[in-house]
Image: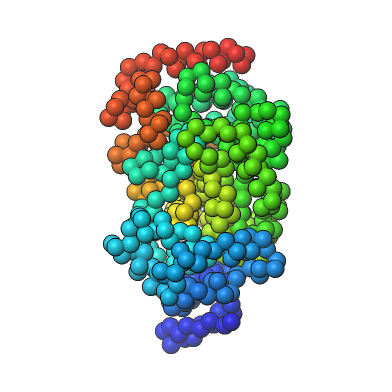
Amino acid sequence: MIYTQTLGGRTYQFQDLKTLMARATPERSGDQLAGLAAESAEERVAAQLCLADLPLTTFLEEPLIPYEEDEVTRLILDTHDRAAFAPISSFTVGAFREWLLSYTTDSEVLTALAPGITPEMAAAVSKIMRNQDLIAVSRKCRVVTRFRTTIGLPGRFSSRIQPNHPADDPRGIAASILDGLLHGCGDAVIGINPATDSPQAVMALLELIDGLRQRYAIPIQSSLLAHVTTQIAAIERGAPVDLVFQSIAGTEAANRSFGVNLALLREARAAALSLRRGTIGDNVMYFETGQGSALSANAHHDVDQQTCEARAYAVARHFEPLLVNTVVGFIGPEYLYDGKQITRAALEDLFCGRLMGVPMGCDACYTNHAEADQNDIDNLLVLLGVAGCAYIMGVPGADDVMLNYQSTSYHDVRFVQTTLGLRPAPEFESWLIDMGIIEPDGRLASREQPRLLQAVAQLAAGCA
């Protein structure tokens, strides 16, 4: 179907729905690289006006990627909750925006709505929203998950300790973990990107974390960010796997480029659930995503990168994860050129994920060849905290020495919490207070923490 819009005496034509969606997307380098972006600001506004008048039901009737060609499309349509969608089924995209921003549309209403929202609906409404709108609606969404800690409660802001090491040196990793704990970080997950993707390497690092967890009764969960098949093999060998990790994307072809499909993810989730390691919940999956991943694999089907990203959240939602995060600036300036585009993408991703009922965090990051710096990330951190982001990364010095990109530090986690009056997950917060790491009012304790500092020496000696 051809969509048309007249603006400024000129009539713009968009040959199909995915073209309309792409032209309506705020400017970003990835869509320009793919030849999908609007050719002018006026064309973008024309597409946004046309999109605003589009009924939401159009996205159920006109799949952007054919049902027969893509298992993610089949998942989206086959699992769509018509009953949850019913209250907004008569809306246009523009009316949906106004309804989302209404004061009477509260957290309870949005929670009930989430199963009825397809990723294309979420992406479409985000394209006609200001950053302020995205923040306002994201803040109203409530998505709570549990394993050993509770993630996503109001007034809480969690963090992943990311203690990567270029040689998987257990001493370096142990020091980074303990540094993070002493800053009150780690309640989302202790997640290591291993330099070596083998069951043996995965098992060794998981046993290191699990030994620390058990010795000091820390309410945390761990994850090794190896390929999902490696993690399944580690489970079969008896490894203490808490969360199964996998990078995912929004098309079947893009997921194939990662070496996964929906059947493999189901197998991995079943394997993790069989271990019964969660103490307060059974959300056992951890997914990472990022705008541009489908395009970089030439698996985007001429769909704009932000809509492809939102489709990844349908995959994540299906597997009831504890954590999902958009690694927003990791792929590089070819996809998100500068700090402005990175900030916009992060807010879009957070909005779309939370609207769909996904427990969204964000790796607020950039590569060294992007037109961005740490001041851009400082600004984004405040916006994410206000918008209700579930968690961010805690990387030693904000500089990942293994993956070679810039992220956020333990100090950044503390900054967001203290500035905005947010606290860690309740189970982890109680442990931090008991260990003397933080005061009951949330401040880092000024006195020494001899019990945990002793673990540094013991672990270093054990790893030598």
